[in-house]
Image (tube, one colour):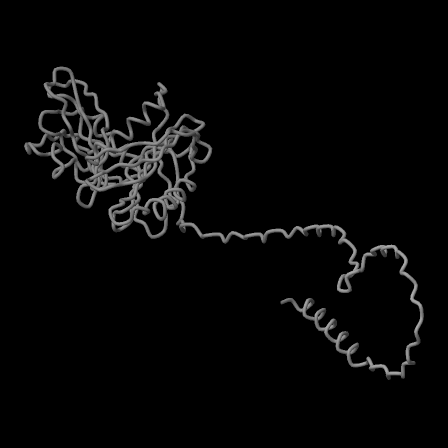
Length: 360
């Protein structure tokens, strides 16, 4: 029962009690003896007109009037202030002259540069990122075909299969191109990652692929790999002058002797590569100087092309395909630009003169 109703009932009870306590019974008076009188015949008395007797308990309560609904007061939602999450920390800027770009390595991750390529990974090998810079070409390739081909190459190298999402527009710095998310498997493990292909304003190309191993954590790429991948790409700057570095000075041995080895494994196996030295900066022009001085067995002019790089032990080797008119099968020659020993001619070749390469 509400307090208002209880108060009203209490007031009514108090009024009734007070009324009962204040009434006094009347004193009786003596009545005279009746006398005989002729009582006239009663006349018709009109029926009294019934009048409505008000209910004593009823009160004339006016009809309630409509009380306007209060106008709601707009209370703005509290503004959620986003707390900035610090991204991966970057190190000092590094130049990749043959690739035509520079970058900042991500602190806490291992990285290495070979020719035009940058490799970055964590110690456990759950994250791998590869950046390949390519010089301008006379013939512009089809970007879509190039993009698909690069992804297929990595899938083949990883003995797996990579599925790419819908290709979307993307960029690295001022270079515009395309991007796709990757899923699938490499080396028998599930992976997720991303690939990008862009073309710089001066017609240089760059392909980047990064992926995380999801064997232990299906969110490894989203939570760890992608932030590192994005931070590294955001640090990349195309360096137009980087690919125009002057060639290192080379010295031709005084005797000018062309020494042909008798070791059939020299240059043909990864265990016994041709060691030109020079590291990532001077190594590529020293490799070209070696092959420019190489001839076929009868003095034929050779044609050579670099197939790519591969890690081997504590170094990185470059593989070159070499042909000349009449050769039965393309020769594959392995070169180490991180170690030096006096170069010789592999079996089956000759040279113009003594190799113009001394210890760097």
